Length: 93
Image 1 (cartoon, one colour):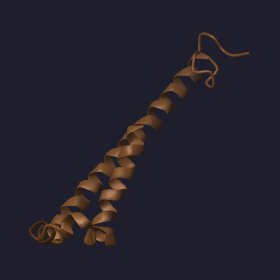
Image 2 (cartoon, rainbow, N blue to C red):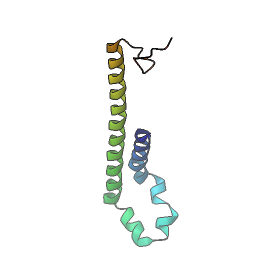
Image 3 (tube, one colour):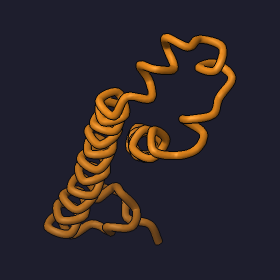
């Protein structure tokens, strides 16, 4: 669940600063000082950097899920249990 959230949030934070939505929104249109700051390439780059780090965290989380699943599969196979059942003591019939 965390992996999906991190990947989605990371993708949005990476793409949004360079889209038209970032340039034209009511929040910044009503605050000229804030608009000037958020239109800066430094601010856009900062948000993009946070997005890349968030997406990487999602990929790491997803990788750990796959590794845990592979280890569980290997341990069940080594014990002679049914790897599909998830429990080597009580194989399914």
